[in-house]
Length: 417
Image (tube, rainbow, N blue to C red; front, side, top):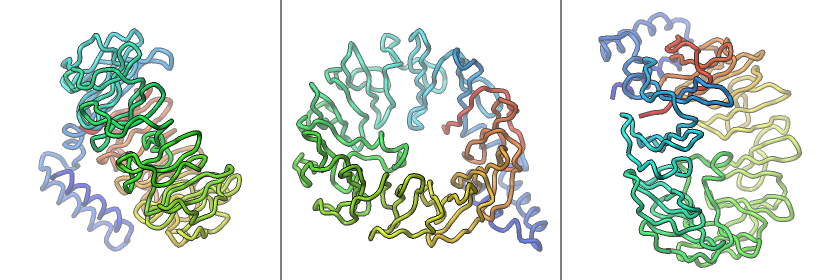
């Protein structure tokens, strides 16, 4: 509750902090409200740090990693003994893997929860309480106690989403349930995987194997769509496809991308180099060698042809580039933050990371510097905390730009507990 209130307060202050006649008054109101919620501290960051955030840090070298976990007081929660630590879906479970493959899963208190005989380097992420695991070249699923729930009898598997997992048996793919039974028989050469596409098109929260009731499937080198019974709804006739979004799916023909409806008919003819999915009536596409632009559902461009957009809209605005400079545009293609920066990314916690003259800082939604560009690199804020790099080392700052942990680590990634 405290975190929610402080987040709202910070967002409100961010919106009106640049009004000249109210700046000083709002500053003291901000201090007053936060001091009531957290009488032990003027800023809420200490409570947020201790109770909600940890950081994976590396004190080793590029060749010999020494990775551990610290809290926001810079105290070791997990000693830096590992070559890799992976956090699984906020489930408070960490996969610890060293170069000798001797370590396994532990929980947030450092207690073993997996039989060390199972190689942690060949265990996937926990999703819906199960993680894929490999044993003697075959894959199955284990629970958080390290027990086999689905025996390792598949050639490969993908994580469970909405009760279904993709599985490969002798080169053919289908869907299984959490008992390992085939729900859709392995009759397909391949199935469309949202995890593979999520880095460029989908967010993790969007990820499902059946979007708008259809899954992508390959047969004989061509792609189409099946329903949840495994029946072809759109026959396999495309070079490649993406998932349906707002009634349209991107499809590839003769090396170009366009968009089809749920009958497999072209709605937007294939003429683009790369596609994105539709959101709020717009999709980002690559048109020409260099330019990324937004189109509507009629295939019409909605922004200036000289503007290259590479980030989807968030909260009604998108980062855009023109003549090597970056700003933010609205859905009408109008600049809401002028292109005065060398690079920009999306807003998080009311701030966007921005680069100018090789240095990074953070701007607000008016385009004003809140944290001056004095860092070699930065990462986005999480609950008011952001990793920053200076003189080759990483540390942490709060949303006022104050150092919480001085730069001292070779790598740092925030994780929410």
